[in-house]
Length: 176
Image 1: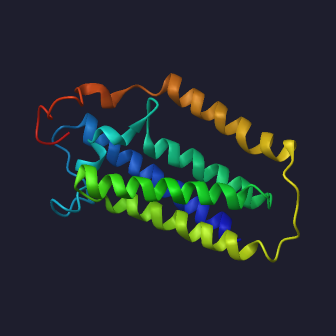
Image 2: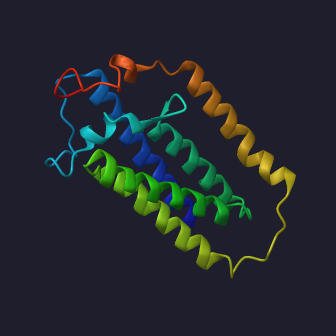
């Protein structure tokens, strides 16, 4: 099923993005394979204060989000369309932050954004083929309870490798 494949591709892209995020913060001399120049620099984006939200790097949020989208697609849940719309809006907001605040674009981030939009379009087209199902508590608990548990576990057990410097000041070193 295309929706599940897109969600799994998004999850894989988020894993790669988390590796880039970790390398940028933990390995000072590391360079990213997706840093092409000043305008297309994954390292600049991952080192920005906007790469972490509520104590977790954005790629981990994206990974959990894509897994929820994949589960919703697998179950043919009515939650798929609103969740893909929310993911696409979040992607658009993050793109605007990259362009107008950070001043650099991360190519892996853009891959994630494109996958969100593609998943939204496929879910939108698929709504006509699927019989309308009401939103149910069991569907919501199937999707959101495990995701909440995973996010809590990540928040509690992922070491804060990104806390090596304070974002209120300029970077103390050029890379990482």
